Length: 282
Image (cartoon, rainbow, N blue to C red):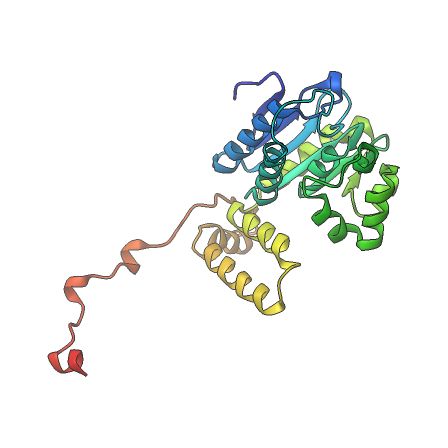
């Protein structure tokens, strides 16, 4: 893909890496970058060659949040719509996502990382829900994400006090999935993405959606959603491939290919038994 100056996009072996590229501002996200990031997430979601997405930042920082250094005349509703679009696209992206965090991730930048399925940080990473220090309240999904991840009291602590916490504490609070040395993070994330790419894409997308939505559903709702998702999986080539690989003692090769036998399931209207007049009038 062609690199934008403020968002670098790189594809390799089914992994698309999106790098926020405003290092002079610690990758603060301005209106232009919100729009480019939105378009990049749409493209990643619809590109079948993309099997996993990594979000990271250039220059030793993940993101210092929304850029408030350049006031604009945009209506506040338009400003928030840009953030809402990105948050929903990331949350609903039918591909597994990894936030690779080096340096700071604060405000909307931290919530951008939390919106990913996995967060990998270094011991030097720092995090803050900095909004109240700016006279603002949570955005980019923080009010939904934080209580689910850490519970209500810790969410209030992080949001109301806007403390800066280190990677060790973020890990202890389940806000970081792994903490790895800075010199190892590139290789660690590459290996993690490779493992995700090797997985069954349709099944991964179904499981991600089920987990994201399950916390707000009853058990009955969750079971019904699981049954619907599983029927979609059974209609791909991945389930029989997994069974065959198990029997043949080899690793499966997953493609997500739709594999319903249309010839078998098609109904030949010419040979259907037609109802009699009595049956029609019954």
